[in-house]
Structures are given as C-alpha cells and as structure tokens.
Image (tube, rainbow, N blue to C red; front, side):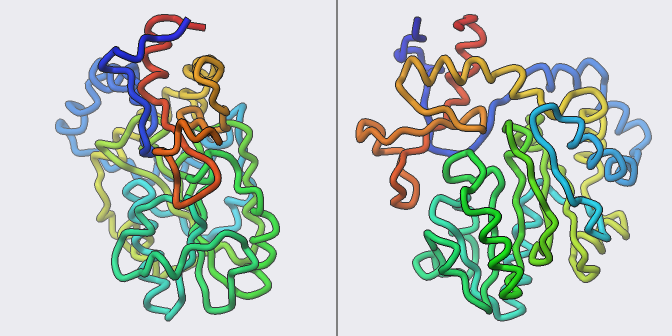
Length: 304
C-alpha cells in the first residue's frame, strides 16, 4: 500500500532537512524546559560538552573514534558556525577551499568563494595549498564518502586541512568514523537534524586550534545558552539513534514502493532513473530525494 501522492502533506523534496519528530517537542513542553531556563538562566555548556562525546558513542548504529585527539571542545551553533569559521580560516591562510560535487550547498554559496573553481570529483584533484570540507555522511548521497580513507591519507601527505561535518550523523546508520588523521583540522557535530533542534541549534566543534573563535566564545561563555540548555536536556533523555529507530523501517518501505535506493541516512533516497531528474545534485550521476514528509505519513498510517 502506498500513501496517496495527492495528500498535501506527502511531498518529496530536494533539500537536506531531516524529519521533524514531534515527541521531542512534546518532551520540551511537558518538562517545562523553557520555563526552567527562564527561572534561573542556567549555563549548561560545560555539562553539555562533557556529556556529548559519550552520548554520540552510545549509539548502536554508529561510532566515532579519535575524538580524544582534539584538545578543545567548543560550543557551536549547529554545524554552521563551524563551517563559517573554516571558510574564514581558509581565506585568512590563502587556501583554496575545495568541495566535492553534491556537497552541502551552503558551502558552495557562501561568501567570496567561486563555485565553479572549487568543485571536484576525485580526491586526486586536491593539491597542496587547498582546504577541504567533507560531510560525513556525505551530503550528496547520504552514505559514507567512498574515497574517505584515501583522501584523508592524501590530505595528510599534502598538509591539506580538512573540516569534517557530521551534521547528519544522528540521522544515519552504519557510520564508523575514524578521526586519526593529522590533516583533520576540526570536526563539527550538531543536534539540528538528529533531535529536531533546527530552531535552537547547538552542537560541538572539536579542534586543536586555540585561535578558533568558537573556542574563545566557549571559554568566555558567549554562546547561546538557551540552545545549549535545551539540547543538554534532550541528550539526557533521548538516544542518538532516535530517528533511525523510529523511521528506518518506513524508509525501506517507501523505497520499495517508489523504486528508490535507500541510503544510510534515514530521510535520503537515491535514484538513477530520469523520472527523478529534477532532484539532481551538482550534475552528479544520481538523483537525491528527501523523503522526510513521506516518512511521517507512513508512520502515522502505520504502513509497513
């Protein structure tokens, strides 16, 4: 059984937003998280940063090795603040920022960077004097980038700084991220997708660069404390696997019904069929389809 595509709430999308999971919002309201904040304006950034790395590795679906390699843990407003910093860092150091085709388009469109000159297909196109942002899972197709280990070795050999963007980690499965490469300048994590925190973004940035603006803002307690307070309460009460455990079976069903290819990211499917050509990503060979709204309808109607 398929959900009727005439349903106004049933819509395939091109963007990358994940599933908005209502129980997370209901918890915030039921536990009066906002009221408690306004009563005393608690600063939970230290507690949040202490808990967050361990919380990530309580996942039954994913793991991250090498977080202890980084000296500084800083609050980041989602992953976006970390991306902004790395754009500035690359510019200040005279580096050419490279992006793989299909990468998160924010990095393509922001600031002074020339889209046409920085898009690449293969890691061998990376040269000394470059910098690289890589999403993991890869924004282009929702899976681990197939060249990850090769490109990390390549970047290490050429002293190319790399920022790893883990914005989709909490929406994914079968991600086993190895951070033991000297080229990795920093790693960004966020709860915006995994725990529906897009309206109160908070995350963590790991780096060894003491000059990073997020490190200084965290030391001075100049980040958004309300966001951190909300997210701190959520990670104490919800699993990092919440979205996969809730919607994973429905992703598989939608893919069967519409002849799509499931990915390791729960709200993303692929197709090579020209029927889906409007969902192309930077002239890639495949089409990326966001199924976050169909996921909610399938779950609501208990279609398995």
